[in-house]
Amino acid sequence: MRSRNPVFSRRGFSRDNGYAGFNTAPQAGGPAVATQGNPYAQPTGDQYAQNPYAQNPYAQQDLQYGAPPQAPATTGRMTIDDVVLRTASTLGVLILTAALSWALLPIDDANISRSYGIGIGAALIGMVLAFVQSFKRKASPALILTYAAFEGVFLGVVSNIVDNRIADGAAMQAVIGTMAVFTGVLIAYKAGWIRVNRRFYGFVMAAALGFILLMTVNLLFAVFGGGDGLGFRSGAMGVIFGIVGIILGACFLALDFKQVEDGIAYGAPREEAWFAAFGLTLTLVWIYMEFLRIISILNSND
Image 1 (tube, one colour):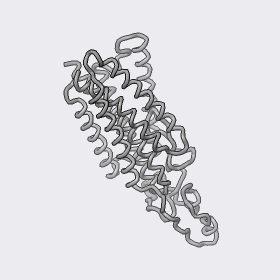
Image 2 (image 1 turned 45 degrees about the vertical axis):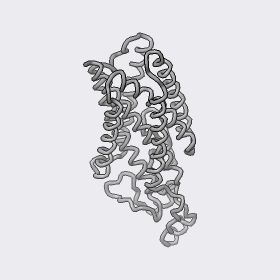
Image 3 (image 1 turned 90 degrees about the vertical axis):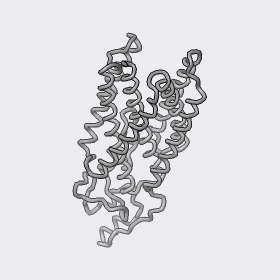
């Protein structure tokens, strides 16, 4: 599954080696997709045969003899309700474990190191699970929900520390900021202000790769050289790169929305909705962490 997130790789709905939608055509009988302004549509005579999700075994024969292609049954196909339900389930597990870790893991002077260690351990386990899911050919609901549970533990610990020791109300501010970005990108995408095509995808992934490499170098300098590394995650530079991270997260959301739209239009199987939920969760966690980092930096400098 091609990545919408700069860290993890996942398959696209097209089930080929390209980005979702570039090499497929809408499903026969599925939702209509306009050919004008849609960089993914291929208005050719064999469009139904090109769709890997089309289930009509007589499609090419019908086209050969001039018969109109029959619409395949829509049972078992992904819908927007499937995506919403699975995304809500994934985020619900994440929020629940975050709340539990916030309440049950103390951050007083005597226990903060242990709680922080548990949070980092949970983050590492979540990262491993995310990589495992990313390389699986099929979505595993149990794996995705387990990832969300461990990620929630990490977010709960980190949010509790920032909220109580650095900036009161930081967690809620980061949540509001994340919701605002999600809503803004969704409105802009539905209004057509954001056009997701090959150029957009290439630009976002190139920028994400550069961002990740730069942050990795900064982390290595911090680990082996001490201090703040190259200073890209602290002070004024930290705020600037935090804003860049949020902008990248907004771009990833647009790519996620396009993936969902294509999956529905091309008749993706219902289980593919778990991939959409997985990608949206990764992106929202990314944006939340960038907001939390900016808030932490701004209040540390007061």
